[in-house]
Each structure stands twice: as C-alpha cells, then as structure tokens.
View 1 (cartoon, one colour):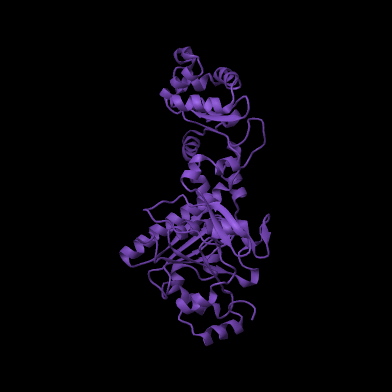
View 2 (cartoon, one colour):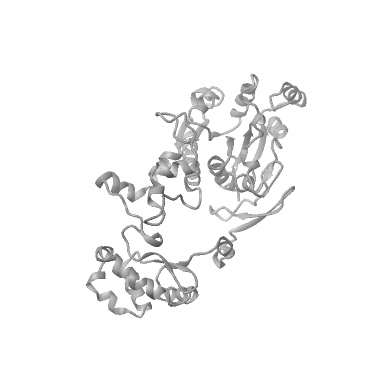
Length: 400
C-alpha cells in the first residue's frame, strides 16, 4: 500500500509556524515537500528559535519540518526565476506563507506560473490575505487573537484579555491551507487547470468564532467571561477545583446533568426547578456553582474521575504537559514518536493525528538548510553537474 499523497510534490516557500504546519500535514500523508529557503536570510527563522537550539537546528524547527527536503534558492537573484520555473514544471503545488503582497512580487501567482505548468496549484497563507487594506501588513498569531476578538473571550471575568495557551490561529490557518491545497489539487486533476488559493490567518480566526460569531453578528451578543473556563451558556461545563487538583466536567446533555447529581449524592438537584434545564441552570448559574464548587472540593481528582466515569459523565483531569503525553490513551495510540537527529540526538515529538488507511509515514528528521539542493536540481530540473556548479558559482543558491 502507498501513502495517500505519495507522488504529490509541493514547493514550499515557508518559514516559522503556520506555513510549515500546513505542509507538515501533507508530508505526513506522503507528499514530497520541498522547502525553499532563502540563503540571504539564513533560511527558515524557525531554525534559530530557543530554547533547545544548536546552530541551525532547533526543536522548534523539528516540530514543523519532519520528512521534508530543503533547497537553497535566491528568488530575487536575476537567474533565480529560471530555476523556479523549472521547479514549477515538475511539482503540483507552490505554497507560500508570506505577507499578502509578496506572492505577486516574487512571481508565485497562478497567472505568473501557468505557462510553466497549467495544472499548478498556488496557495498563499498570509496574515490578512492578498486583498484589502491590510494585505501588506505582517500578521502573527498573537495579533490575530486580539484582532479577531479571541482575547476578549478568554481569561477570568476580572482579568485582562488573555491569549490561548497555544498558537491556535497559526495551527488552524495551517489546517485551512492544507484543505485548500487538497481542494485545489482535486480540481486541477479533474479539470486540468490549476488556480490560486488565498488563505488568511485573520479570516481563519474570525471563522473560528463559530456560534459566538453568529450570536454577535445576529444579535450583537457579547459573551461574558466565566470563572474557571466556564461555557458561555451551558452549566456545568467547566473546571472544578478538587481536594488535590482540577477536573473538567462537561454536562452537554440533560442525561449527564442527572447522572452528575447522582454522583454528587444530591439526586434532588435534578428535580430542583432552578436547575431543571439548560436555560434555568444558566439563569441560576451562581447558586448552582456555589453548590458544585463545595462538593468537588471535598474529594481528590482520582476519586471524582472514577465516579464520574462510571456514571457516564464526560470528564477529565487538567493535566500537565508531561501527564498528557504519558496518558494511557496517548501511549496506546502511539501519539509520541522518536526521531534520531544527527545533531540534536533523540527527538521525541507528537505524531500526526491523521490516520488515513493503515499506513503511516515513518517520522524522519527535519532537513539541514539546503541539504537537498543538488538532489532536487538533478531529479526535478534535470540539471547536470556542470549546470549546478555554474548556478552555484553565480550565487543562485546563495553565496558562492
């Protein structure tokens, strides 16, 4: 059996987080991702992100770049364009995560590349997209979380606006870009014509407002922040402090609420008119949480998890990172894999969650900067040893 995307080639002008995350998903599914790194900038800036960084290698870079190939190519060099077009003729996708105005400036749009390959799919992932008043602005996850309203929703009621603990806009933008690439590929292979894909972090963040966005756009609703990460309208659906830690309880159905009352030893609460249904529990949130907070504080987390699990109430512990990575389910599913890196040694990282068929691509280390330049130029462009030497001497691949 072959991997789902085996045979797909992607030329990726990418760096840092969101872009490499997009192509990582496709690489894990078998695509050949050829990472084009700018020699004048030292390649992908992710190579130099601390902590755990040594020279041009870092654990940050490894997280986003396993199994990829790297070439050095100066797209601004007068002869860089001829090499780019030869590469485009041999690949299926040209992907970039640059400022919205940069793909056209660098000649990475479909109308600029179609002569070399009419089936090419050109995907841009930028902060704000390729049009609009912010197209020329750079965009980072933290900025998007503030701009799209995420921070106003996050944190304790009396606390400052707060970002999420992870760069979720970057990660989501990567997933959206990967979906766009796959859709473009399908259309290209069906119709024989490629296209541009214009994906932005800002619109991804707005889309992920989900039902809260619908409430706000339709009714002008501003969800209040809730204590202990409570759901805006469903109670109980939040963290509770136990005798020795925290537990998350999610009563997203009426039957879960009734079962919770039994676990608490308070079956009468299920018949209390104040807590009869979703709306009444939300209206009387303060009174209900006073009861629940006192109850959960009386027993340790492990006891609550056992009792709630037996009753079928959705729940879980608030783990540390170490606990999460060692969870029995994570171990059973092989969620952490080890890669032997030539410089960093054994690198343990989280495996792809994508399971398509029975085959999974064995994890390999991220590439050294420009490691595959000669191989790719020979394999995809058909360049002879003399041609490669001549281009290298001219500085097309960086300093001669």
